[in-house]
Length: 286
Image (cartoon, rainbow, N blue to C red; front, top):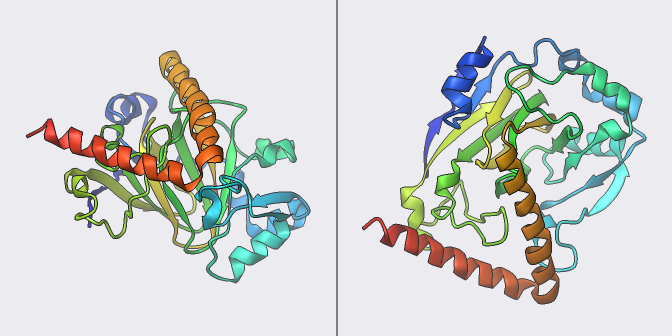
């Protein structure tokens, strides 16, 4: 198994302590009480979403969404939210909803939570909800815009594995993307020898808890139970915001265009480039 240390869990963090111990050193932490003032913590149940917003049409993705070809990064289907919630209640499924801005359809929900005061730079316009069935997985990646992410869990539990940005080559990042396709749970050290040098973090968050994922941190997520969360994003650095915009442009211009042109062959090229980068990284340390 990969070398993973537990993420610290804290209650009663002040902005000053958070900045000193976690924000500046870019270290993840689980808040046990950041959501406590929110009405949403108790209000946003499955029954509530079914009755009040079950009619909303939502994009649903399976584990196939990242496969090369014409369906790359597109939803499998669009169904009513009530139907989807019934699916994740009924048992394991790989179906997920992600980057879903429910607040565009139901702006009144914004009254049920407040942007944290733990740091400056929270985006007001980009709150997203994430839903997933028991056993569904979020492939290892980092967020393309380089924002800090505060993932707030409402229902169910999630296992979160994190790697700092300096581990990018050792986890075989695919060039021109924010993706890595290593198997976090069953690392193949023969096929990916640089994984022996990787150090990361691991935790399980449950309802009422928030994990802080610093800018550029790789994260892999498993839904231990069917459930959902809201991600709030913050970025206090204008330089980092500019880098995030460049990341977005590079991804859409280079990676998506080459995928359309070359399909599976483009992925093979990226895999070879990732292996070579990992080799060069470790050769330089010998």
